[in-house]
Figure 1 (tube, one colour):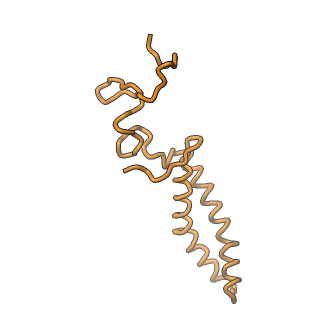
Figure 2: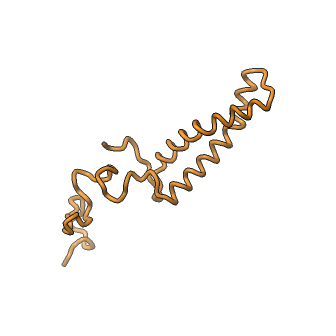
Figure 3: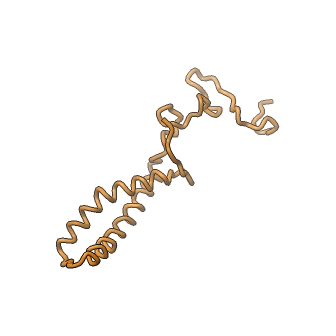
Length: 121
């Protein structure tokens, strides 16, 4: 199964970071906002919405920074960059020149044949 979307820069899959931030914030942040709202008198819907934004925004920010730092440190969300088929990084059995299981190397079919650095003389 192919990943739906990838946005990887500097070794971090930011699509994974955004998705994980969203899920963790909903699962953890929403109950925190609900518990904190019991300590404050909120009489109107506008006051409730403003409270949720004031408290929820810092929770979202802290969660996003923590998830991004985790992704950078642990290379999380990379889809299995070690080349296994479950990670979805292989394209039609092409492993971009890496050694196969039998130790033989495959040729990168996307390489420029005029590039002198890729030729073995």
